[in-house]
Image (cartoon, rainbow, N blue to C red; front, side, top):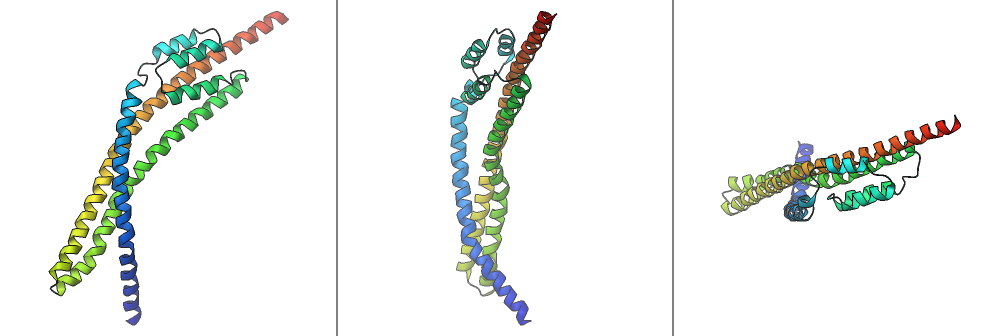
Length: 224
């Protein structure tokens, strides 16, 4: 019995110690959610509104291009995002590589871009998942002292405990809701960005492949 009582006391002390860090994290989450919401608005104003929405014309021009300089000019003059232009420009800078190596480099570039966008979305995904959990923790922890105060007729401590519990619930749910909204919007945007980048990259690879085949045929004709 004494052992059980001791374990209960340890559990109570641990939960009491966790209350302050949990509330601090919840406050950080709500601040983070507000900052990310502003970042989302800035991203929409300066990136999303100028992003390329129809790549068919660009792909057609790429396939009709004559040399690497023209390809670089087409990429720079397109409405793609600056990050996409930089990635494709770095890829074109290695165009002298054999086609197989160049294709592997292109696949790696696409993977890196996908990981870059996934890293951004992961932050708000974590807040969306952890917000309600921590909110529930900060809700349940004060209820223990509140129930004890209720049994002793101390309504002041009870009211304070309930207020802390309700505030924690609101913070957890609010931060999670905002983070979930941001994640959903950004994931849709980034999937569109990756679709554009993959389409243009495939067009570049097709041009490289066709030129390599043409060079092989020309070499075989010369040998014949």
